[in-house]
Image: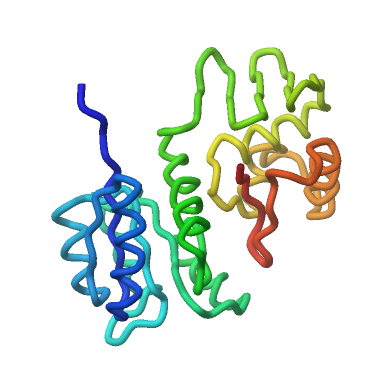
Length: 228
């Protein structure tokens, strides 16, 4: 059986950026498509059904935010992974991007190896590189046993309090995905229980202490995500 190759669509109005990113992704074996405008990107996306779309935010006519919204409104493309690539690092533009439905935010300039690493982390969300067998979630040197409520980190076995475990499992189940506070509260504490934002922060802090401040990242103004 031949290996399935992930398809990546790059949308940017700067030819040099497209060439640079395309070259580095193609070297890793990905099937790469490019577009110079948001409108062109949407047309290509409808034809090739990419696994990941990487959008520049600042483009003429149709910017990345609007393009992302159009993708999310298309039934065939609404679940495609979307990452914004931009030189703008302001919090408000990141929040606007996540509000439009983006899965991640990559700030340029970025080194090729770091860029490829971020792409691989995003694609893990589709389950390509995350092992989920017999209720065991395996991510690098971290293993989470859903059935036994045990966490294995390197050589250490940990039995965490229930809410800490469920919070870690939620974040780790979709590496790279940004979970906002409402999603975390609904998934871990349920709609019947009223807890404040401080409760989430305390649990995140405890997890970071136990995992040497690895894996769990803060996306300012949005929420938290898991990276490995």
